[in-house]
Length: 578
Image (cartoon, rainbow, N blue to C red; front, side, top):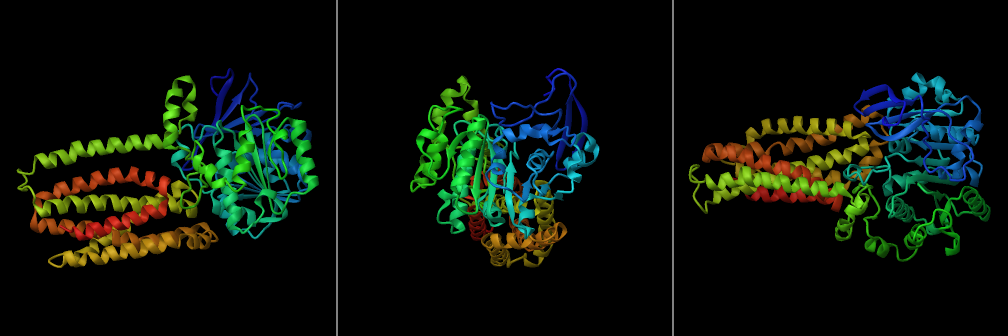
């Protein structure tokens, strides 16, 4: 952005939630209107660009109170629900700098609930640039809520004519290799179920996504919506869904009830006037699709027909990218990588095919290989070569037990820790809060468990190790199998209460997890003290590997598999207590 003549950063704010930059251009007007119709006859007003962590540009529009200055917002795909039916109250999840609020204001919606996680963004629009933005957050029709979208929906008893989620992440999210590694609990089956349950009769859930080619995001979202409808025992999802696209964005609507003939007529008129392509509506024909923003094949129409038909699972399995529905157990919405597609993509990298490579997953593989290599060279090899100096004879049973025991501990401890950090993002609403609370609680409670473990050491240690392992297995199994119920309960609490309950849930597990390591160290101190440095090294090596391996396993198989694999490792460790 700063390469554009006349642009400069005029404000910068920092917090744990991100670094915010406000950019202004004195020469070249900034124009941010994602997916704007190529037929648009109006342009955006003066804008200030806002970046969070130098990514995902949004804009603050200059607004003087005249709704006509906002007419460009009616030329985007996200305006569709306002043309199908009169809307009385709506919920905007991820209000940000306010463009979705302005869009609703342009359509004279009487009541708008707006939710935004980052209070600094709110301060920008509500205070610092309030005059520039037209005091939109102080408008009597707008009710502003600072909080996380999923948590707000869980605690709300309100039903809405429209719940709107628009472009809450950067265009290059998966291709950049960053978002593929991060969790998003906004687009999971459970999240969409909660959204659908908060619609009034005839209400709409509207989700606008960037379009990537070949299609990925939109199709994965549609597959997730279909599964959410099935979970809610909705028998006719194909009658409740419409999908349109522009050259840059797509908008998926899910209605609480079948679409009427009048709504379908309004949909066709809205799309035709703006040259938006119809991708799916109940009763669509192949002659109606791929008319304006023409693709080699009507990919979105073909995918929608397959996903909403009897061949949905086969389509997902055979598709070039991973479009399996995201769930709370596998909340990696931006993970599209499939190994079978890699041989096709590699020859295209020199021809502009980099955007096809979902590099985030491959970066994890590369990091895992580096960690394995470093571990073998710096720990395993010296241990093998230095056995004689340590007094270790070939075939010594105790030596093998030390290796197995501390490798299992290093892997298992981090498997559980990372699984719970990622799980508690949903409860505590942000990775920063989850890492801080979960990691601190694990370390402090594990320290308490280490202190207590002195009572279990000595000659009885080999038999006593089963008790901490049993405690770890019990609490982990209860939490991971009952997490959906726990989440439903905790999301309805206030922020401080969620934090307290999170600490109380994690502390007993951490307490037991703190015992196996010092118990084995005490045993080595009595029988083979020369192995203590190597036990530390082996455990540290396994910990580095497990931090990467845990994310790979969670992305591929889910958190439940990850935790139960950790429990298996603890059992193996118990049988190899040195």
